[in-house]
Amino acid sequence: MKLFAGTAVRRGGVGAALTAAAAALAVALPAPVAQAAAAAAPPGIQAKGAYLQDGGSGRSLWSRAADTPREMASTTKVMTAIVVLEARGLNLNRTITVKRAYRDYVARHGASTADLRTGDKLTIRQLLYGMLLPSGCDASYALADAFGTGRTMTVRTQSFIARMNARARTLGLTRTHYDSFDGIAHGRTYTSPRDLVRLARHALRHPLFAAIVKTARTRQQAANVHRTYTWYNTNRLLGSYRGALGIKTGTARRSGDCLVFAAQRGGRTVVGAVLNDPYRFRDAARMLDYAFRRR
Image (spheres, rainbow, N blue to C red):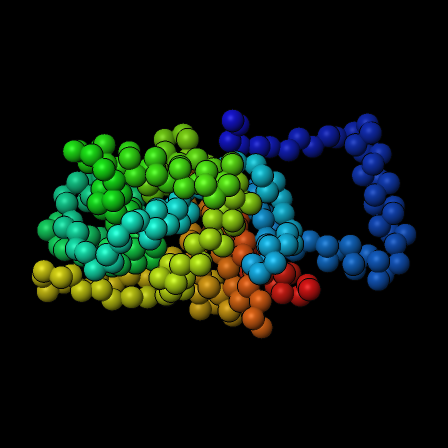
């Protein structure tokens, strides 16, 4: 499957004639019609892929290449959280000991981190905060290692990733595949904007997930030592956009900046996603404004 899609722009010939005709038509349109046409899409969105949906009705509000698969960076961690939260017999107070391997992994990849310290014991709940707020790949590794099955860390994390893919299939995410537990892709981690929004809507049904991703800052105390972790949410919509519900950021060289987001106003929830967008927060705000102006 081709992961990256481009759009060719024709210059001259029929393309130039159509452009000229469109420009002439725009000039000829009455002002109210021209204004309606301009309002048909949120302005200036730079995302390569985007999708916007009414969270209640499921009605599509606007899209761009909504079904084109692209790399998604740390928005992967939404599915990591789902697999953990839906694990049979889940005990959120179960403690996990931080292994040196988790720290070494982050250092090796230059990845985002919750700065977990070797030997510290943190609960599953705390690790979810460490994964979803500062986008800690070390916390994601700890969860995949703890919830996977097998005798080695490699086998356990691979089994966890297999569960992520199985859950994607049952959720009907037909243009989504994972080859990592945190978005550090090896060439086969991708999703489409529509799939990412569908996953986000499902994730928000979990009360703990919804509470975590809406949190701007948290302080968490390790269970076995006198150490406090302070984590800040990487989602800049929180605190800057009225009604923002959070969700998840993602950034990598190949994926560009990504964001899956949601907001609620007047009892109405809107969920959206942008992939490969250098202005993701600005564009998310514009998409949300556009949605809330519509009925």
